[in-house]
Amino acid sequence: INHANVLVFNYQYMLDPKVAKMVSKELEAESIIVFDEAHNIDSVCIEALSVIINERALEQATRSLGVLSSKVSKIKASDNGRLQAEYRNLVNGLVDQGLLDAPANDASMTSNVLSPDVLNEAVPGNIRRAEHFISFMKKVVEHLKARLRTVAGPNGGVQSETPLAFLHKMISGTSLEPKPLKFAYSRLNSLLRTLQLPNLDDFNALSDVADFSTLLSTYSEGIPKFAIIMEPNGSSIPGASDPVIQLACLDSSLAIAPLFKRFGSVIITSGTLSPIYLYPKLLQFEPRVSESLQMSTFRPCIRPLVITRGSDQLAVSTKFNDRGDMGVVRNYGSMLVELCASIPDGVVAFFTSYSYMESIICEWDAMGILRQLTKHKLVFIETKDVVETTLALDNYRRACDSGRGAVFLSVARGKVSEGINFDRHYGRAVIMFGVPFQYTQSHVLRARLEYLQTHYQIREQDFLNFDALRQASQCVGRVIRSKSDYGLMILADSRYNRHDKRSKLPKWILQFLSDAYLNLSTDTAIQHVKQFLRLMGQPIDQEALKSVLLSLEEIEKLAPAPLADDDAAAAQSGGGGVAMLTEANTVVAPK
Image (cartoon, rainbow, N blue to C red):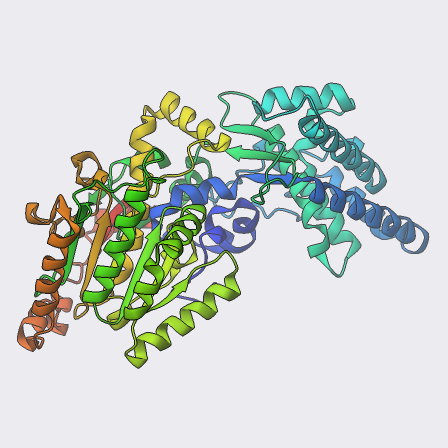
């Protein structure tokens, strides 16, 4: 890492404190950090500091503690000096014993999991010896099992507690002290390293329990930035009993705050950072530069259409009260058939959830709509199985290459909506059936919405609209991948016609969305589709294409001027500015 000019890695290498302290600690404060495709960065920050534990994980943790106990007994008999050396190290602070490296400078990345007293103090005496620590963790695991049994019992149900309330019940039920819990994760790492165990993956469940304990104890004081959600059925399989305890982080700024403190320039960029003003609120920083840019094009290569009615003038929507209406289901099916009859090559359709996609496909099959659809294109469907979906994508591309044409039915927030590109003939149109809102009955989501309303004054409906529209933008954005590419973006729901919804679409989509493309019926939209495809079927004007591309001389002119002496001093101290070219919405966060 020290010899590289550019590093490319996953968000977790920067945001997850357990990984970041091992990987990103060597980066200098003058490094420029770029989060690309950062539209979901608040969700990634929350996931980095959230822990989910179920019964299966607790059983695995119990087995892992048994393995550790027998391993410690063997080493005490054969190589007791190793455990004695660890004990002496633990008398010193974690930094002194080498488990955590000393900060390279004052702006070094601090850990979100470990509070300053954990970094600098000696490990408490009652968990220094390996056998004492194992006994300590057994009590923690047994207490979590007892809480899960309570939730899953006949008098159970969903329970939500603050970290302080949960910790109080744990202390009174187990007679443990809160301070050693802060050291649980680091003490477990030290023990695993001392024992030199071959397969550390077997101890992941135990690591989750230790991580849970450390986060719980560290953030128990002050404003509750976490919530403990206990559910009797956390399984996605209907009827299956799988009680879970989830330590849910509510504040996405916790994970990213150390980066803003340590690095002089942090760039957050994506094509769907819209509305852009919400990100500084969610991540709690003051942007130095905040810019939303249009797309530079030489022809109207995107045609967004908002279809609000079927050919029979019945309004179409996936609102909960309307989605089961047979008229809406029939209109959506007829819309897809007519679009596939008019659009060549590949068409991608997104639904709001797996359950809705499955139910509407069953209804279409009963109505004979799928038979009509297969006359025009082959039909492929995304499933929750990654291997099946990969195979379906491969065959979808083969169908497009052969000229047969295909339609891919997939789900917003699924694998296809985020990581797969449908460039050129693989995606001539994307259809978004409905507005992809999150499941609003989720207890974790309810806790987060309440936190945002109380502490950041972000209204519940504003956040839900923002989240749904960024997902919709991600889905329809799959269709355009280069300057010479073109495609249709069809938003099929009457709610997209409302200003509060469509205004949250990115600027590069809104620049093509004129009033003539709003509030359309299916038959009117088909006329726009045919007119757009005739226009895009004309040969590309190469001179016009060159006019929106930068020449080498123009790029050299854009190079930043040499820094003045005072600017250079500011840059050395980590406060330099950033020069940037992008076609996306962008936020730049200063130190």
